[in-house]
Amino acid sequence: MSNGQKSIQWRYADQTMADRSAEVIRTLLQHGYEAYWVGGCVRDEYMGRRVSDMDITTSARPEITASLFPKVIPTGIQHGTVTVLVEDDAFEVTTFRIEGGYEDHRHPTEVAFVGEVKEDLRRRDFTMNAMAIGLDGTWVDPFGGRADIDRRRIRCVGDASLRFREDALRMVRCIRFASVFGFSIAPRTWMGILAERDTLGFIAMERIRSEFEKIMAGPSPLRGLSMFVRSGLYSRMKAPFVYAGHDDRMISAIPLIDPAHAHIRWSLLLLACGIQSPAADELLRGWTFSNKQRQNIVSLMSIQEEWLKLTGANQEGMDKLSWVRLALTHGKESADGWLLMQRALHQAGAPAMAQTANRQLAGWLEEMSIRSLKDLAVTGNELVQALGKRGGPWLGELLGQLLLHAAAGQINNDKESLIDEAKRVVMNHEGS
Image (cartoon, rainbow, N blue to C red):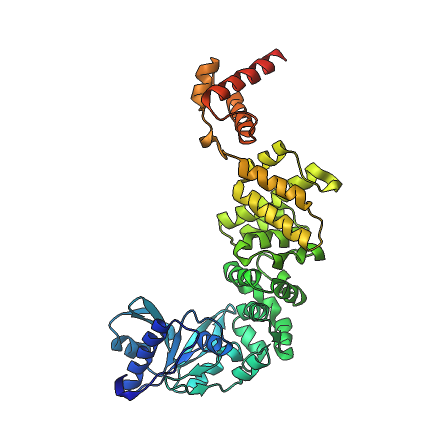
């Protein structure tokens, strides 16, 4: 390596990314500036967690940094940040700075560049994120971040109320870190959340949703949910969560669902809190979920509600035609998801369909050879010609009926069989 200066060995970062980021730091050092890895990458390396990106802090002003590298994006140059591109890696390089005059409890109105890395670390949210490490492996940890990680504790840098007043989203991030890492929250930091929780209403819902999705997809969502409720943050958002208690057994089923199926976890949460699908749809819109996410969650809830109507207090399986109708209405993915939900509820000891009935419905779902009108072997025009009738509302109803019975395996999905069935249905209807 140039100048004989060796870089530390990263154990939990992609080696190519680590080497490229080291070259960025080395270039800054060679031009007489200080430079360090900082923030989440340092924290995750110390914790033994996978490092996903590597941020750098430096004494070089942003325009100087930009002049030293061939490919640079002025990401937030007014705040001291530029993005240095090295092949297919991107590294945010930020000048040592302090911030002031926070606007709307989120964005600083003033940024002043400083000459000391410790001053830069002082402005950060939590001690575990206020650590830096040099190219030679020298640690800069003025606020005890490593000690707090060792104690499995989230603690603010300095005055917790001030940190949360500066950026109210930090309160949700605090709970997210505690939930995902399995850490406790230091008493003064928790008191800071309680003191500043009313400022959460200034934060855009998409930012809160992004943090909450990480809680729900994490290893201990119940921990995060509990802290979110106990802190009172749930009722302080722009789109508040109307919470009036929950079903403990349904809530306990959430961690039993693979995090890859986050929409099932969300459906369980909303159902456990007694929220019906129309209200859930409105809530998820307010929380800025995408249309696809919202539809996936609400579809599962709708299947649950319709199953309860069909089975009542028995909570057993359902007849094949009713199940196929639900699967056609909400889609195979939602039907599969609902069966997964039922298995988790059963495992958690919550009211759920018996496992034998679950297996039967899963079998029927796999047997469905067609899933939508486009799979039907006859078209509306062909039915109109075969029946000699004018088109009208009856045609849509008839196509739906043919789809249902063909999907359930009660008639063959070929043109001749479908037209014969259509003639029989029309004849019976006209004869009644």
